Image 1 (cartoon, rainbow, N blue to C red):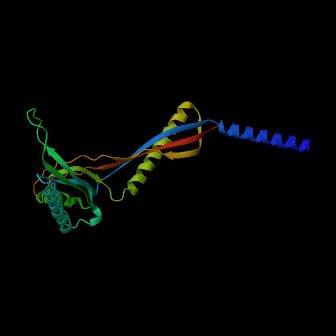
Image 2: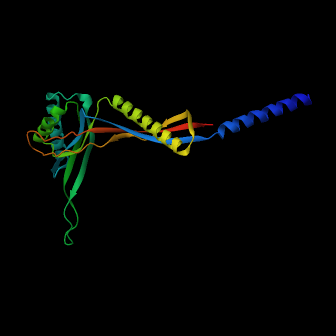
Image 3: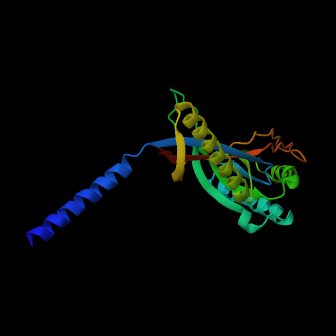
Length: 229
């Protein structure tokens, strides 16, 4: 019985020693960065309506009527219901200017309605912006460009990042006089869209000038290599 226990203990010590040797094997960790560029094929714009009136209900009705007209125009231009969403509805009081001789009081109300719209045909974007401003949209903000299917571009950015990490590892190993072994692990972190150039927009014109620029997707990978003896 004591002999069996002694053999078991020796086996555990040998196993632990082998694991420690493996964990302490020399390794090289590098981070690679890559990017891929594509022409955007989609735009997202935030547009809004604001109306002021002494009566809060009248202010809300005015903003709602304009918002309804904008939605009808988007319907007529073929913008699908899934590509537009009301992102904010608000009502706030309007106070008189500060005057020491008069107490502060509410002089009216401002109602607002904000809508986020995706335009999948960039050739139509200028006409859409011009049309909604003609229908009463008096706030345009948050224009951004993107890709309807970013997966192929993301894959290209990841391949570029891995190639960059491999090249960095080769250079470092050569400079240090060691030999690269197999890849032990690969992990991805960070990455994503880089902002596209913002275009100039002019309200209340037939078509706003648009410059889509390019969409860039970044990728970053960390690779761990074993160093061969």
